[in-house]
Image (tube, rainbow, N blue to C red):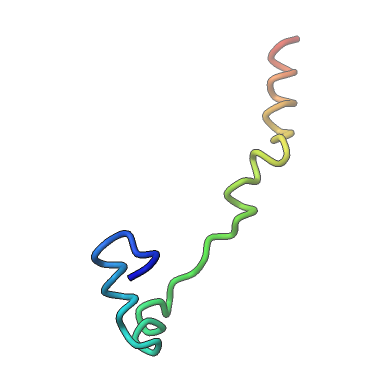
Length: 55
């Protein structure tokens, strides 16, 4: 199977599409923005708290 890296992946890829959908049902994708939110913008509460401690 092209693109498969594990035996589990090969097994799932060999199943009919309806069976694959049943296996994926109920899984949710993680919101990519929530994962990288801290990298996209600074946490202002932490910055302000740090500035108050420096005084």
